[in-house]
Length: 563
Ligand code: TNX
Image 1 (tube, rainbow, N blue to C red):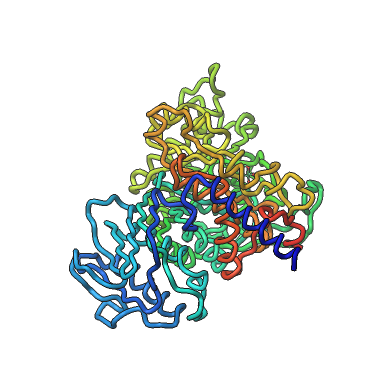
Image 2 (image 1 turned 90 degrees about the vertical axis):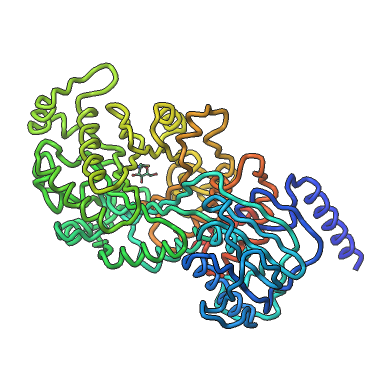
């Protein structure tokens, strides 16, 4: 008994210390933490509360609110509204003082911005567009019992919301997460589950890496061999052993219908899908399917090992551009996104140096090497320019990895800066838009802890959640860099990740840290507050939704979780 009391006293001291050291008010546990939170007194009873929406709201806003009404009704077990023509939410006039939830249009707020005022008898939510309501609802869900995320009814879960006033909007407009579906293939269901958890943390861009040396994953009607041949490899290296080959045929691809299904699913969550068609490097699967598109003419094979291939697209003949336009034309039609990612990374130039067609092209274009770039780097720059013009003619903008800067700036293109922050900062200063995804902070294929031997297979060293949380690409940067920075993204390359459990493990909970980098201004970031929220609030959500995740924050190594 005595020891129990002692333990409780120690716990109380710990809790007190915890709250005293937290910079921010710790009374709500929401990630990413809202811009401002002021706590009031008392609680709002959410169970059975009516849900009302301003009649001025557009259909797409009302849809979000009706969805919320349905979720609350199902999970709390009490009808949360009065039946009306728009489903479960009742229409009201802006300004009415209503008991229950009231969702109002406030045109003065920016896109994505919202406010929530919780009083004992009412919850007033304001936004100016669908995204604002979507994020307000995500915030409300994080403040409600975990059961709100599930399918089961739990009337006893404690359906209360603490009285408070929240004002919120994101720091960055582009809040992205990437997934490599080439090195390992993820089913539509797995991709949807991946998207579900991005939405919880208010991410709004899904960068889908669909093509690479080891597999082409998107159906292109004009070039069926891309998937039939390029979608399958005859084996995969085992672990880190570059000389191994498991000899097992591996592959898969998404039909255009499946792609449309994912796009619609993501859109419902407020997420835009940005496809990446990596070019002119990382195309060994392409030249295996169509060997005439390579410099030597082959034969080639879909690559079985990881790393950078020297077998790339040959830009020395017009056929290459015809091909790229054929592919990108279909891609531009399929994806509503204003951006298409055209890769551009790690394009080895040895074949181009030896290739007569490439060298003739270099001559014809009047390209000469100088102290800054090789002739072949200028040739890649030419390819990027041509592809960019083509996509612009289809109403699209391009994003490329920072290697698109070899051979000079490409004004009008957006740089995805992965090699280091400085390259991106420099590009922003030159007037190009930039998305920061520096490998040292944003590569979720790295191990979550220093003792990598206790973690599942990884590459690239260690990336702890603390390190992800520290990223601030605008720290000590000038206005030009700030103006041209669209946002931040993390990447999940899957060379060494073959199962959904492993994939989720690498994503979580680092995704939570990423979301605060993307959403919170510097002064709102506080690792201690964040960590407590992850452990006490987010882990139960992951458990309920059935995600595998790292428990390193609790000192539990990966080997105890991923067998
Ligand atoms: C570099 S980042 C790559 C990818 C690899 C990754 C492994 C980038 C643009 N290219 O092809 O998968 O490293 O971490």
